[in-house]
Image 1 (cartoon, rainbow, N blue to C red):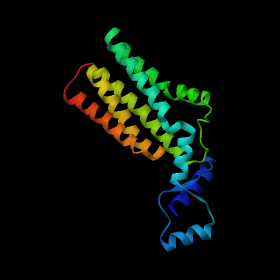
Image 2: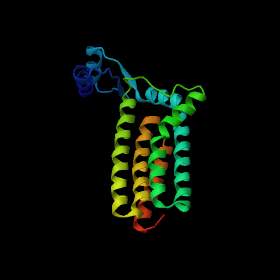
Image 3: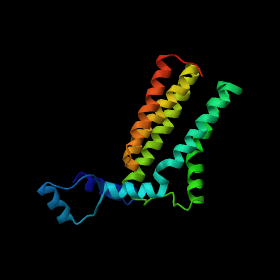
Length: 193
């Protein structure tokens, strides 16, 4: 009922068509009756994730581009200093999605999913979190330069946790947890780049 209400709200106020996705099954009799009576379609989460995996090759190209940006920022910090490395990571990070989409299109993938997909909305929400996290990390950098990279690891790691819902792979939990642990260790050990 809540999903149907939100779908109507989005359509009426934002003019956006949405799909309702669900995990598992609609098992309770009253919920099944509501679905049948209202005649609205539900897409299983597995189907939505399959669509995301097909369009973005399980997210692997994005992870590779992200890793390369981090590698370059690591090299820059040793060659040109912290300020250059911060800007390398921020600018390179902003280019991860466009470079990934270009690579996917070169590989013959669509690099897009249906506009109404709930996973498209979740991906956008994680992008907003990422931008806010980058701003917070930069603010921390102005207070203490050694906090920037650990803060960014925490931001990226927490975003990867949501990728588990986007792609349906538990690997993203492991990657997210590893990045969060590295960020925490970097802050607690007061490591400098």
